[in-house]
Length: 100
Image 1 (cartoon, rainbow, N blue to C red):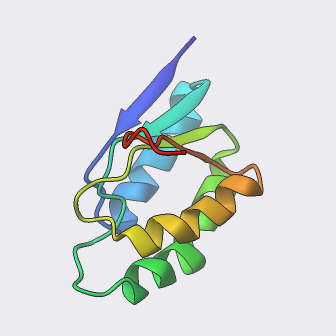
Image 2: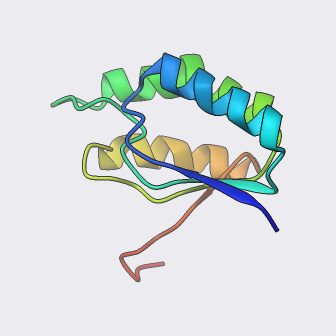
């Protein structure tokens, strides 16, 4: 089993594009993103916009399971938005709080 781990992408499309190329080259079984998917913002709206406009398509394009551990820059409301994607089978979010 092969996987790629990445973190601190901070909404940087160039980093996501580099990651996509690496995934296409190495053909891992899954991807783990260890937090800070989004750029820091005092508001969730820019993060949710990034998820809608870029992140959803990125996950569909790479076509492998994606597991996410939310980071300190990832607003809870943004993670709640991503949970909707989780229910659509696009990704899985690790809940480290112990809450269900």
